[in-house]
Image 1 (cartoon, rainbow, N blue to C red):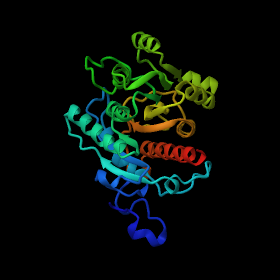
Image 2 (tube, rainbow, N blue to C red; image 1 turned 180 degrees about the vertical axis):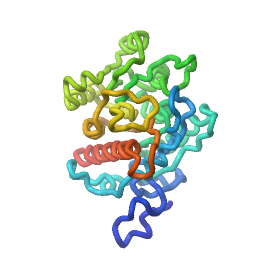
Image 3 (cartoon, rainbow, N blue to C red; image 1 turned 45 degrees about the horizontal axis):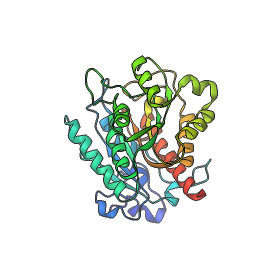
Length: 321
């Protein structure tokens, strides 16, 4: 177990740019035997072999960790998630370039070790295809899970460019294979020009709930999240956040940007609310393409804060239990 704060212990914190890199300066281990006693584990899934447009998300787990700031109390929520939760960085899954099948197996095994130890995994992608092994690992322990999915796209295609396994197909495959209960599956932030009638007809048949970006605009994020929480209801839930749900003004580093998206203010509040009100058993943040270093990388920075808000919501839920 590595403690990145060890040499700075007498000062209470360390500079972001110094010392070993782990998420929020959390203790770091790759030994599953050392997960006992922790509440949440950060896992990296640095793979982007299945994207349909720009690659680069393989570099995101490292960039998101580098963009993280020291622990501290959330000024609005009045809770320090790192003080109330035991958070560990479990490192990256041993992915293999140009071998998506073995990479997905490695991700599922790594996330599965976290779940088996009784922790909540929060996975740093990687492209959105990693949601498939992430959710599979959680569903093996909890049964079919509910899903709250923030995204520009539904990712419910049967194929993308004739390929069945891609970052545009994981949600179709998870529902088809029984890992996600479609009646407890909600999408938020959809916009743009894909998918088409066939995918939405399939979703309607399955009972999936979709909120488009114009719903967020017209109803407001609070009302949309309230309806989403009601639709998902009680039981284990996975939270998946594609960074392209944000307007490119807030997250320019992503492979398939679409103008007209959410603000970071709305998304940060939304994911915290979801984590407070629902029984999260896992989460991922995906499709970040780093464009700078450390906190100068705007997209990695907002991705890091999304994870912080999820942690804050989990801490608040446990405090109020």
